[in-house]
Image 1 (cartoon, rainbow, N blue to C red):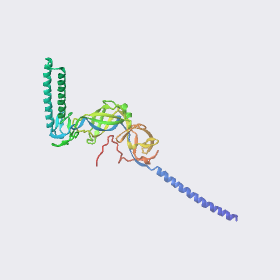
Image 2 (cartoon, rainbow, N blue to C red; image 1 turned 135 degrees about the vertical axis):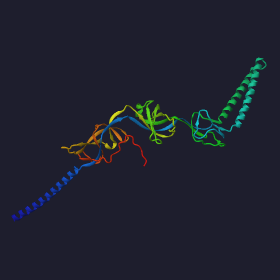
Image 3 (cartoon, rainbow, N blue to C red; image 1 turned 180 degrees about the horizontal axis):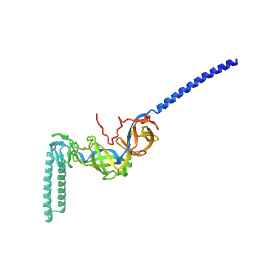
Image 4 (tube, rainbow, N blue to C red; image 1 turned 90 degrees about the vertical axis):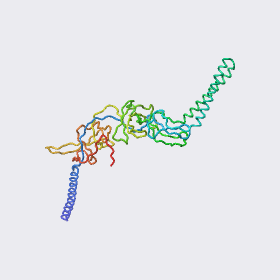
Length: 374
């Protein structure tokens, strides 16, 4: 009986030992596989950090407007009798552009002028008679009042006749003509627009934090979509003396030369304002920086090979970033000039992982990228 129990215990022990041995074998193989996977080199792209001069700038968007611009119209109604300009003409200040029919007003003016002349003759004659003591002072005073009234009516009628003529209030370029001969115009009907184009203003808004960096005479550069390859340079000419309470922005106006009249009022413009002096900073593609709640970091590539063999690994480094410029970002702290930095493939990396560098496809690193239509 004892012998049978011993044999059974030996068999049970053998079975259990086999099971535990097999489990240990499997676990060992899994560890070996995981260790092999952990050491598999990851393919990345990398580039050397370079340093360059960075000019601190403030970017804004704004709109162009003419130094002087107006939609021309007349104060009085009437029928168009004469048009003395063509669409797109250059007009000089005071140039006659349009006349309304004014025969009735001119006839009335002539009548009032005749009345004023008679009042003048009567007054002059009465003054002589008063000196001869032939009439009283009251008669002379009455005649003087009549004369002044007649002259005032003449001046009033001249103003009405003058309002029938449209003159350019300033020199500039005329827009499209909106009226035709014989057309009846109501008071205030727009006849054409007149815009003085050289120079031209660009108005833009900046946050109140930028007020300390603004000054009249500072240089600005503006670009418009119509001429993407051209930069228009001007200077700040005015800064609004109050901050808009709704947005906490300040309005700034710059003046741009526009001798060729390429810039037109109403155009959208992007404005760049230089502030401070240039700084020499390390530059990386923006794709090289990984942002997370704990800070910004990059992966540096180290060569830990020996005996002439290369063995590339990566390590994490926390960095302090500065301003961005196109596809680039300035690194204020954490990376030195010449360090090899991973520019893509960071998702599959951690400290100490071996890597292979493949730069067949690399991220953009253009400080001034341009939009290209395909």
